[in-house]
Amino acid sequence: MRLFLIQHDCGHGSFFKSQKVADFVGFWLGVATFTPYRYWRKTHAYHHAHSGDLGFRGLGDVDTITVSEYLEKPFLGRLRYRLYRHPFVILGLGGFFVFALKHRYPWDIPRRWKREWASVWKTNAALAALLVLASLTIGLKAAVIVHLPVLIVTGIVGVWLFYVQHQFEDTYWNEHTDWSYFEAGLQGSSYLVLPKPLQWVTASIGIHHVHHLSARIPNYRLQQCLDENPQLQHVTQITIWDGIKTLRLALWDEDSRRLISFREARRLASTV
Image (cartoon, rainbow, N blue to C red; front, side):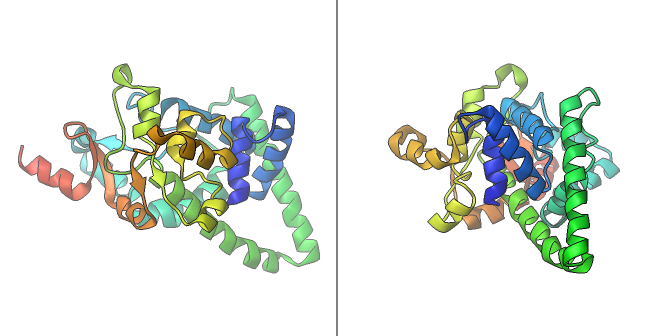
């Protein structure tokens, strides 16, 4: 987990003074975490540039639709979205799907992204070479037994961490014409309060509102930045239990400006 988040900071250019060093380290950490570095860096930059913007959704974030968009969908469209937002799918299957499959062939990016596709193929080649090496040394079965559980568990935790950073009741979404980068960072990003050991493992990424206000702040300075700026402390704080409860939320209600559950959306629809 911490390796992935150091790779994350390399992508933002915040972990090292030299971008060349950051790109070199980021690539190999990407191999270790099954993540094509340049592909992830570009899609994640898109996420930072458009987080909370209803006019730019679907790349580098958790798919989120409004209540009105959901109600306008046909039955199969609603069913598809409900399945996608189910906790078992988004966590249990989502992490493995992203790291084991989608990162091997990311069909959501255009072919003109030459450097990003090259990063995908280089990462796949490095992983294939490591798999062959593991097969020749400890054996394929042993390699799978060791790495598969790690991939599954870290995938679940990683997706949950990313989920709770923006998916909570009083988060921020707005139409593009009214969207604000500052408000999206401060209101639409949570402060996940973790015990110090877990904060270290997750490289302080739970202090996500500070990170979104300035992605150039490295993870090892986020806590200091929060402590030295009291105005940054009055934001939505989420505990681990709060983060688990947010998994029931799935739709953005534009009237109440809240993320709500399917049950509440159904109740609202019945009163119209």
